[in-house]
Length: 129
Length: 192
Image (cartoon, rainbow over all chains, first blue to last red; front, side, top):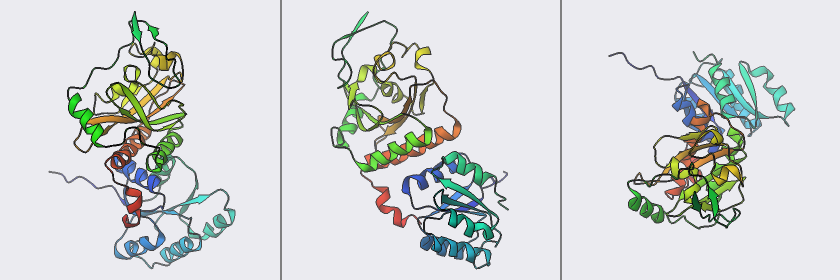
């Protein structure tokens, strides 16, 4: 019997409960990715340290803390590859943040509020090697 | 012709004359157990709660719907634990789309009520909110009895895409958890 391929594991850092649970369930239902959940950067750090992910969806609400996580990722501090693709969830009212994210490629920006379908399109288009 | 009394607060309280075309839903085979399960939840006629309202708001926003409800189908009425875009707190069960939705496990969709003989002359379609589109994901009590729906409604005919259907069904799970007395948001800190 041929083993069923599991969808790629992607870490989702999103504090809003309803949004996070919906993203996880819809991605699972549609077989797009297998989201692993963290409610904050603090809770994401041990996950990033302990196992490899193929992608990261990161809410930027924590500002400098979120940026620091991205900087450590790009420096190769975690178990995942340093050039792991990232979708950063930002706010249209935070243009300065977008500027700081320029050096964190490969990275896509998605402004809140967005539809779950838009996020899944962004995730689907990532290079999830 | 059929005399159809209404219990909804904003719907006409006079008997409505309707044609023979409108088809009230069948009564589920497990109706006594279903009603007992609904009452055991101890949710009927309770005040609004944020744990339901935030899910209903999110459903309306994500699916671009003007109306969204947590509807519980009681013996003679459907009562709304949470509602957006609809003034009345309950309607007669006879005219409830949700009475049809609880008859099946899968999400129940009516793309254009005016083209559906079960609903074309339903007073919720011809009067009041003028519903054209309905999608309802059945809500199960902990024992599996289908006690109501999380539903979204529009005044325009439309279709429900695969992602939208998955979103509605994901949110249905959150409402079921809330009905069962769980408050998953309170446990969110442990979700990581």
